[in-house]
Image (cartoon, rainbow, N blue to C red; front, side, top):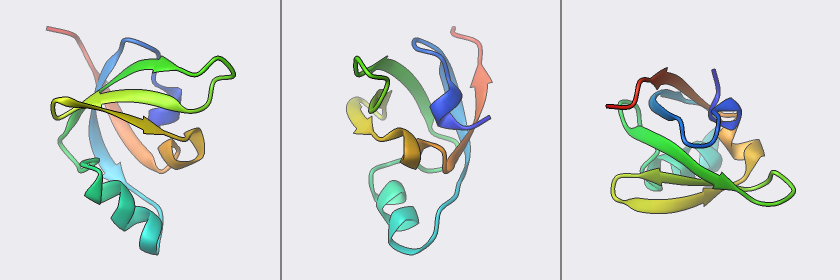
Length: 77
């Protein structure tokens, strides 16, 4: 599944980061690297962008960029 399809409040682990060139580098620089846990905190009223929680901070990401990140949903503990 891709990050843009993860439901609000659900937790997942990043398995792969796609995209090419500068986009991929930018995603990795923001901390979106494989094996990182991420939670979708909320979405904007029109559904774009997404607010994510990862590595102790909040990140806002456009849905188009979130489509390049493959995740595996995990159970909350």
